[in-house]
Image (cartoon, rainbow, N blue to C red; front, side, top):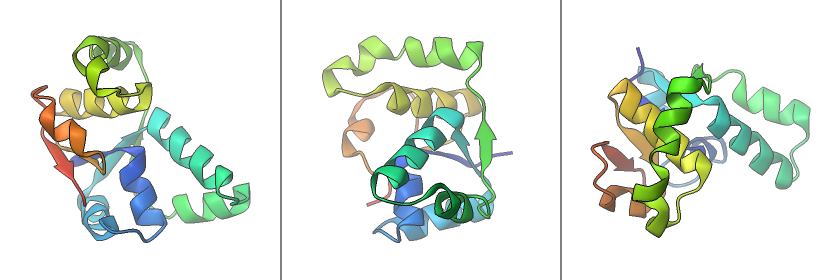
Length: 128
C-alpha cells in the first residue's frame, strides 16, 4: 500500500539532492508510488542533464518505489482532469500524477505550488 504518489519533480529532488528531497525520502521509506509516465519523465530529465543510462538505472533501481502502470482507468481519470487544470497549464504527466493520487486516495508530492490551489479533491504536498 502506497502512502503517497510522487510527481517527477519530487523524485528528481530526491535523486539530485535538491531541497525537499528529504521529504521525498521519508515518503519513499514509508511506501511511495509513481506512475510509469512520471518515471519516464524522470529518466528523460536525467538523460537531458547528461546522465548515461547506466547511471540513471543505478540511481533509480535501489529506490523502493511502486511503479504504477498507465491503464485505461488511469487514462480516463487523467484525461478528465484536462479541463479543470487547463488554466493552470498542467501537462499530461502532472495530470497522471494527480489522477493516480486521486485513485489511490493518497497525497501527491510535487514541487509545483499551483497544484495546491486547484481544488481537485486531491491532497497535494508541496515539498519545498
